[in-house]
Length: 406
Image (spheres, rainbow, N blue to C red):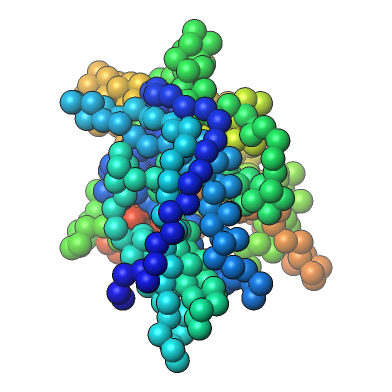
């Protein structure tokens, strides 16, 4: 793929400017980006309707940069590498134009541009956190490529961004923005919230087994593997199980995942890190930013049956959501201190990221007969490591700390 045929400079301006500490959500994703050596890019490619013009795409880019402060935020690094955030009130950003050669598929070229945008590391201090391009065929725009690094937003914030772009919202942006969040988090009220959350974490870290999974009996090279399982039955099964157990589909999904981990040898109780959007907090509702953080949930799955696991998931998720708002740097310090006191490294790197955006589909046929719930039979021995890993972030949030054993 050759470079762009043209590059348009798009000026923009928006409210607010300044320098401050990273917000807790930014720290969460920054840890993951450093650990995985990736900007964890989000976004993708979309076909453009026939009436779209380059000028309209440039106007959309200008709107994005001006409306959402996270799009105008870069990082600064101190002599010790400590990152802080800087919000700019104005600037210019490039919109790249690529021309598909006659007789070729513009969609293929768009896929190449997207791949190049994803693979080229972001300069977090020297470039804006968004890359946008238009692919043309015969002079007509056919595809839009838009890739952002994950410091801009999590999935819930991205959905808000897309809605406001469609509606061309022009009122004040909702919620505290990242600089404002960091200021509150550093206040007395923010420090009290952090202390409450870490007390909850400390109670758990002092009592749970230190290791989630037994060492592998069949080590492989390369060490890290990615697995993917797709199920057409799962969206139909979730509401049925929810109705039978009195749980909601999201709690059921967490419960059956905990049971799956138990059946491959996870320690009891099962300890998971559910990713929490945090937008149920009034100050964060509607904000386009990184607000998601991974809490901690302890599930005693009892006899190994579904009803007991769902009951455990209901209680565990409430506590996890309440205490998933904290300073990740202070959590790392807490884990290190308790590991030293226990004389063993604590492993709490098992994450659960439910990225569904709508309720599970209702079954179109009558529910199947109720099975006899009960403890599972002996689990089949598993090959390879005791648990799958996901170094590329495929089982995470677009949020947040090093991910293992998802």
